[in-house]
Amino acid sequence: MKTAIYPGSFDPVTYGHLDIIRRAATVFDQLIISVLNNVKKIPLFSVEERVKILKEVTKDIPNVRIESFSGLLVDYASQKNVDVIVRGLRAITDFEYELQNAQTNRLLSKGKLDTMFFTTSLEYAYLSSTTVREIASFGGDITDCVPDFVSRLIYQKYGIKREAEHEQ
Ligand code: PNS
Image (cartoon, rainbow, N blue to C red; front, side):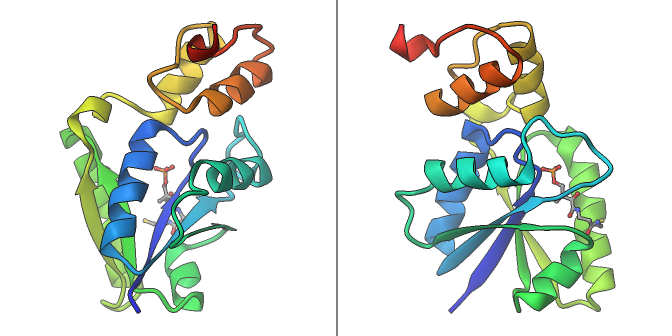
């Protein structure tokens, strides 16, 4: 059975992440989506909230499991006995950072841990969690970026009274 880990901040999960999740879930027998618990950053959603949101948005994908981790990805992957990492690549701007991470993880794992990249579908190439947070914080429309129930939670966090467009 081939298992892969898709690690990330997912703060919040976007349609771009969901696209990668759905496609990776068809390639691997099991996909563990793991939320990074980064103590150095103040997130919009707590790790527990992000795990709950990810569980909800992936509930129709049977071979996906949601977890969280802290510390080094190589240590977590080794604990799980997994040797493939999944990451999405949007534009060339992602490439340098992702290449560096992939190579570092290979080095740290003594060649065991490989990274497989899925190129983001064109319609989500512009999308990032940072952009979503920025738009939402000013009360802008994030309908095309995240599922409706996620957008409601994001607006709530910013104290913005705006219903998801689909429900108006
Ligand atoms: O969604 P993100 O924030 O781009 O995800 C980045 C992530 C979680 C993949 C990366 O920061 C990570 O793996 N962090 C864990 C710490 C680690 O292992 N660092 C060394 C990799 S170079």
